[in-house]
Amino acid sequence: MAAISLPAVVVPILGPVVGGLILQAASWRWIFLINVPIGLLAFVLAWRGLDRDQDRQRRPLDVAGLVLFVPGAVALLYALTRVAQLGVRPGAWVPLALGVLLLAGFAVYAARVGDAAMLDVRLFRVRSFAASSALLFLSGLSLYGVAFLLPLFYQQVRGYSALTAGLLLAPQGIGSLAARRSVGKLSDRYGPRPVVLAGVVCALVGSLPFGWAGVHGGQVPQIAGLVVRGAGLSAVNIAVMVAAFQGLSKDRIPHASSTTRILLQVGGSFGVAVAAVVLQHELAGHPGGPVAHASGFGAAFLWMTAFTVVAVPPALMLPGRRRPEPEAAAAAPPVTPAGSEAQS
Figure 1 (cartoon, rainbow, N blue to C red):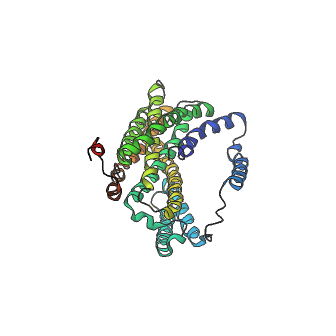
Figure 2: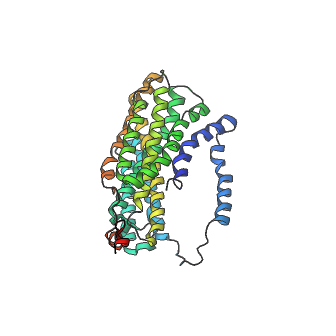
Figure 3: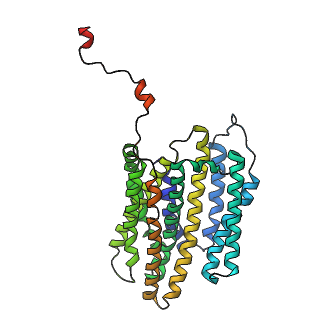
C-alpha cells in the first residue's frame, strides 16, 4: 500500500513545482494544455499495460448513477462559490438544495441496485471502510485546500515568483517520501488507528506555523512545518488505505478501490472550494496591503487546520492491531518440548 499510494501522496505536492516551471517559461494557458500530452500518454499506457479482464463479466456503464452523482457533486461545489459571493440567497441555496437532492437520490438508487452502481454504497456498512472513507475525504480536503492557499500566500504576501512558490512546497513532498516506508511497517505492527492518529497530530502541528506567518520573517518554521505536515499526511493516507480494505471479501475490493479514489478526489475539490470561500471572506475582512492580506491568509490557514481536527473522531473508529484468527490458532500444530521425541 505504501508503494501504490506513492503517486497520490507525492504528485499533488510536486504539481506546483511543475506549474511554476510552466508559468516561468511559457504562457499560463499551458497549465491546461499540458494535460493533452499527459492524457494521451496515459491512454497509451493504459491500453498497453492494463489487464483487459477478458475472464471477468463485463458490466455496463452506470449511466443513471453518473447522471445523479456527478451533477450533484458539481452543484454542491458551485453552491459553495455562490455563498462566498451572494451569502445566503436563492442564487446560493438553490444549487445547494439541488446537489443534496441529487446525491440523496444517488444513495437511494445505489442501495437498490447494489454492485451494479458506479459506487457500491453497501460498503459503508463496514465500520472500518466507512471511517476510512470519511478520513480520505477530509485528507483530500486538507491536502488540496492548503496546496491551493500556499502558492497564493507566497506570491501575494511574500512577493515570490510562481517558480519560487512552487519550490517552497517541495519540503512537504520530502516529508511524505521520508515517512512512506516506516508508515507501512508501523501499520502492519500496530494497526492503522494509532498511525492515523499520529499522522493527524503531525499534520496539525505542521500547519500551525502558517496561521501566524506574516509578510516578513524566516522561512525555517514554515519549511519545517511543511516537512512535518507531509509526513503526517503520508501516514494518514497510507494507513487509511490499509484500513479501508480490512474485512472486505475479494470481490468487493475493486468497488472499494474506486470508491476510495473518488472520495479522495472529491474531497480535494471541496478543499479548494472551501479554501477559496474562506480566503475570500477573510481578505474582505482585512482590506489593505500585504500586512492585512497576511492576517487574512493566516485566518484561512487556521480554518483549514481545524478540518484536520475533525479527522480525529473517524480515526478512532479505525481498527487497531490485528489479532490472530481463532481458526488459525486452532489449526497450528502443538509445540513439542525439546527432547520429548527421544524420551518417547
